[in-house]
Length: 34
Image 1 (cartoon, one colour):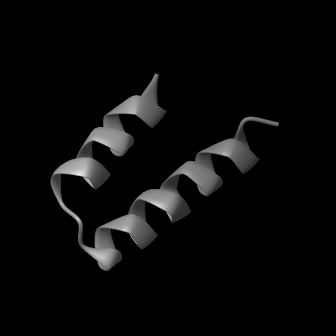
Image 2 (cartoon, rainbow, N blue to C red; image 1 turned 90 degrees about the vertical axis):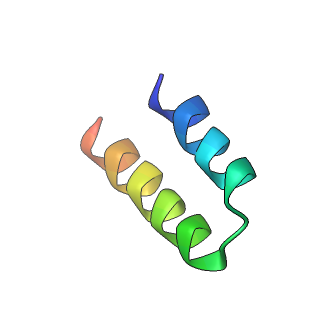
């Protein structure tokens, strides 16, 4: 549910910094889901 939201942010803002933030956030949430 949170992934499409960040994918939308990435598609709207093509900043490499935002790509890194979104990737780190998704990875962090994925690890905590265990």
